[in-house]
Image (cartoon, rainbow, N blue to C red):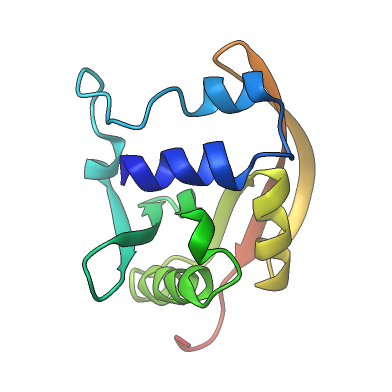
Length: 146
């Protein structure tokens, strides 16, 4: 998953963010084994192609916060992201969640809007000495699973 994250940020977000922002956001391709794995406390889904290469990942914590949504550049614009999203929504409903939130990047905001999420507010997020334009978004779940 670390490679998916790294490539999604460093290659997929190139042009939307400065080089300094990309480097701070994803400083290395390898996992940082010195930090606790936040995914241990979340549900996570991955998309894998037939040859076993990971194409994307999405994760959701138990409060309804969509934490990770990343795909490798070759998977952008394919069915990978919508498929991961549908699975996440189905699991959230099964878990009894009725309201989801996300802090979306400039690029991710477009995808989430197409999936019915709403922008609650623009948020300038500081991380690793850089300021990022992000969007706090939400989705109210209703009805039966997709």
